View 1 (cartoon, helix red, strand yellow):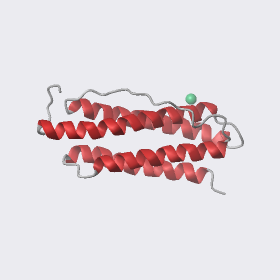
View 2 (cartoon, rainbow, N blue to C red):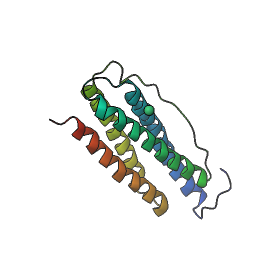
View 3 (cartoon, rainbow, N blue to C red):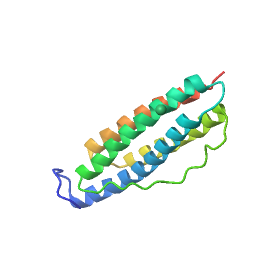
View 4 (cartoon, rainbow, N blue to C red):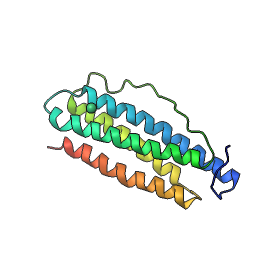
Length: 147
Ligand SMILES: [Fe+2]
């Protein structure tokens, strides 16, 4: 653990960093999935989905940066572990939206799990911002393929 401006106890910081590690790992996987979808989407939905996937990829990259910096602010080290990605290969546009929506749902589950019993209100605020933001994006994705 590194020197930190935080007033939290060491054990509290370790617990929070461990939760944020899980959120960051899941967020980096979602970032890869969204860039994959942005670059490879094909079909009638392309004009809508190409920019939507690109916008969401940029948004998760920015939020991952916020989570990683929170880890370092609390005295930890942000880990960059990249999970393998093959779930989006050779899918049509609608199927790709469903895969990405599942990725967003998994990410939301991770954010909500990290909030359970969270003792630090500041970190909880960061996580709650993420829940509200990614619920909205999950809705946008599903609405893009609704008939
Ligand atoms: Fe692009």
